[in-house]
Image (cartoon, rainbow, N blue to C red; front, side, top):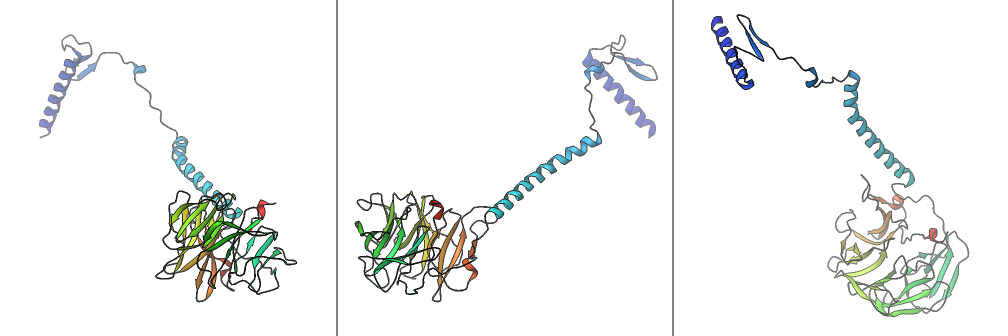
Length: 349
């Protein structure tokens, strides 16, 4: 068996050499490349050209280690940068708003049936239930000032960005529901003038003071000339109240009430007229309303009503990893809050 294998190998070798000679056009009797050496084998006659063969560089052990470390270092730098960014954001902007201190600024607890407050950053404006006077008090506390107005049952809706004028609705019913004439009331106690001939459920100024949004018959309208003309922005097919603009002036959020379930919810509309409910993640059939943005637009504060009690929640508007849409209760419970407003004091500083 061993002899047979040797013969087969020798025959195969001879066949291979013959094919190589055919390719090289070489002759066995007068060889130029391959010479036959009897009983020994074959010899290659052509000189070797070492320059034609590229040298292979074998990396040193240190180079090999560095080759594998580079991807690890890149990943480590990316992770470290992301963690540093999150840390800076957390240190410079707290993840939630908290009530750290409170201060009573008024002495009379007799408030309006529609307890809305507005501020220009220096003074807080409000109506009381006992008279038709517009009242104001410094936000840091101090003497209360009041001015007589034309209203019998006023509802304070909003304040202009420059703090000079209030939007006031003259209510005709005890619940504040239903369209009524909207008035422009100067904060310095001057005479009120109507917002054109507009009767609306609610109204609010845009951040630049150039546009007023108002709701009427389940739709939202915009007027740029203080009520002279208006155009429809969105139809919600439900009663719309408590309109508020985003700080950049590109969105509106407002409260709608379902006529069948009588459950209120917060909706949003964009400048292009598209809109719908805002997902606030408090579960179905939860009454939410009366939302406001903080001046920087990073937080949206809204009211939840249950068991004759009103609580305020804070929703993070910052779209960051692990924190998008984050909710926290303002103050963590305790005494119910009837109304809140955001201070624009930075505009005047």
